Every structure is written in structure tokens, then in C-alpha cells.
Amino acid sequence: MKLKIDLNLGGFVRRGLGVACLSALAMLSAGCRLDMHLQPKYLPYESTDFFADGRSERQPVPGTVARGQLRVDELMFTGRENGVAASTFPFPITRADLERGRERYNIYCTPCHDYTGSGRGMIVQRGFPQPPSYHIQRLRDAPVGHFFEVMTNGFGAMYSYAARIDTADRWRIAAYIRVLQLSENATIQDVPDSERQKLSQPVASQSAGKQARESQ
Image 1: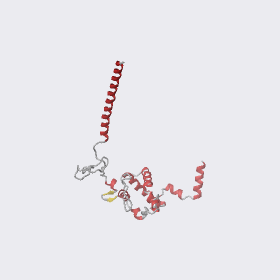
Image 2: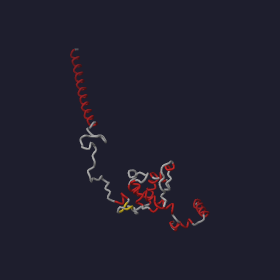
Image 3: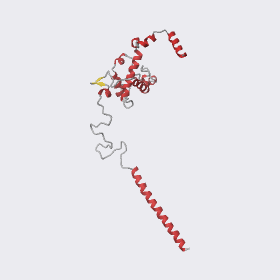
Image 4: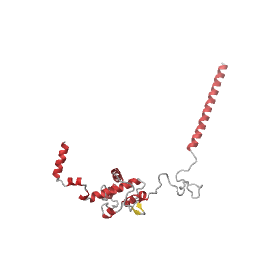
């Protein structure tokens, strides 16, 4: 009986030592993890007395340029050539570019300029200052670089959209503005010959032709 009690006591001691070791190991592991979570670092905009200006965030070294932001193309990034608003685009404008420009215009520009460019967008109808129509002579004569520059830097009550619209998309929007201007001021001479003949047909003939095509 005595031997049995001693054996039980020994097992209890061994188990106690095992639990103690596991607890110590868990505390050591927790300590390491806690140190990883509470690293000595500065939070954004936190002040410091380490630097003379009191700011923990440092300015980039003068002359450094972030990868992909080397803007040496004056036309592409400023809308100007030799310091003057450009009348040309920095890349060929395709049908896909115009479709992209229309999409971006409808998202960012229609609240003020509306879908036709008249300057009577929804927020204008609710009291916001009305921008000039794209169809006035001054803006019809303006170089395309002017529209890019306004989107980039803002103008009057309009703030800059440079942080909202990619550089290439600003050019595409400018191209679509040209489409809107043409749509409001086009003449019969601007219509291709093949399409001009359709315009000269009587309305009744056009309707009959449409019905004939639909019945086929």
C-alpha cells in the first residue's frame, strides 16, 4: 500500500513538472509574439524629438523619382508643347479610346457638364455654379491641351481630377469632348458620302426600308 502511494505521488510530481514546463514554454512564446506585435515604431504623423523638424516622416531625397513616375514627356503630362497648350494628342486616338473617354466622362464629368456638354448637369440644377458649355465658340476653338490641363490642375470652381483620373484617360476624355462638340455643330458636309445619301431619302422611304429589313 505504501509503495502504491509513493508511485502515485511520483506520477503527480512528473505531471506537475510537465505542466510547469509547458506553461513556461507558452509564456516564452507569447513573449516573443507580443514583442512582434509591439514593435518600436512611429505611427503615421507621429511627432518625434529625434529629428530637428519634429516629424517622424521624412521627405524623399531631392531629385528622387518613384518607379513609373518619371514624367519627362511634356505633352503627355502637362498638355503643353514648348509651354503652350497643345493642339495634338500624345498618342493616336482610336475608337476604343473614344469609348473609354465616353465612359470616364459619364462617370466624372456629367454631374456638372451633363451628357451633352451643355453645362446643365444634375448638381448645377440643384444650385452648383454652372460651367460654360463646351459648345460656345471660345471652347470650340480651344486647343485640346486646354481640356487636359483643366482636368489636371482644376479651373475656377472645378477642382483637380489628377488624383481621380489616370493621365491617359484625361486625354481620352478630352478626345470625347471633341466628339460632343462635333455632334452639336456638325454640318451635312461632315457626313460621309455613303451616309449622306441616306439622310436625303424621305422619311417614309427610310421607314419602309427598315420594315423590309426586319421582315427578312
